[in-house]
Image (cartoon, rainbow, N blue to C red):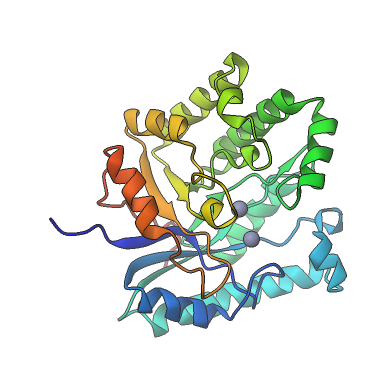
Length: 284
Ligand SMILES: [Zn+2]
Ligand SMILES: [Zn+2]
């Protein structure tokens, strides 16, 4: 039997266009080609809707919402250029990864209209407008603001549900990222109020026929399993949802990292490894 193709539904963050990544986008694409990827969705982060949502590293670099918007335009045009340049070696999709915070829905619709991405990855990195995934201290702040760990999970999945319904992203990014700094997540996701929300979101993803990102970056950041956690993954596969690897690479060196391991997990659970490619929505 032919080994499953190397693909990524969520990849290619580059130091050229993202403060917390390394290397040029072209170097990262070269790494994917070298690793024999068949197709890759390049999905850089969007700029913040306004200065309130600047990350610490962006502020430290003297960037603001306006300059980041300009960089993002450069990203989209560079990605389109490289998509054509390397079309004989790898199929590149030019997309982006969303934020979910106050003002983001209208802002993302504007970005889609202006830049016509091939598709988007719908992600949530904020709860109650607090970014929770950069550090344990940020996470703790989000827990306190939400009124507890369970409440934080509930709110996260509610925001994700609203985002999915508002944007219909072709790919839902790292579905359970909210577990990132919670050592008790395996028991927490079984709690009825949280479980109910996870089931609702999965049903919605199924009904809209969206793809789940099987996010391998978790492994290089020290987690014992990718997002999505095994219990949720089993349920997603039972529902017949397409689950596809996303390396969420942030440098040429980590492009494709842990792909074998990710494929092995998906195969062991009986996932279909004839990976579905995101539906391309632009006119190109
Ligand atoms: Zn990133
Ligand atoms: Zn993300």
